[in-house]
Length: 168
Image (cartoon, rainbow, N blue to C red; front, top):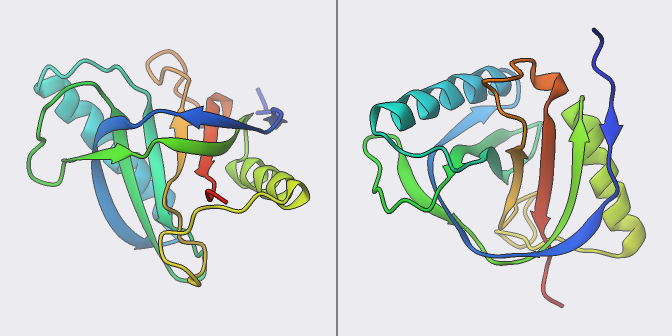
């Protein structure tokens, strides 16, 4: 079965602060998705070994998103647990605020391009982590809404892309 690209409508939503546990790392864009998959497996295994309820969803957070440079990313699991993590797995929070968001299925690049175009057309600006840097985000993440235990093919997952917008 060939995966079909489905991109939902974009909107601005208010999101609460969300706690998570995650693994943050830096990597060149080439090979990044293999490392993300490996880190997701590590998170799932660790969650199971530590009896952490999979409240979810699992997600990938992009701190610095320059495909020609080093990417700064984090793989995580949203949770209400107060677990402090251990080793590479550390607690964090997705900040409260207004986010531009859409849900896509299929090619992540097309989903991201659709949200970027929509934001440009609407005059929406994203909240930068570091002003004047190339694509640094206070909070940009892709949450995996599909249960990986039911559907293993990533191109068939529903993915929620959310980027925190600047308070103007």
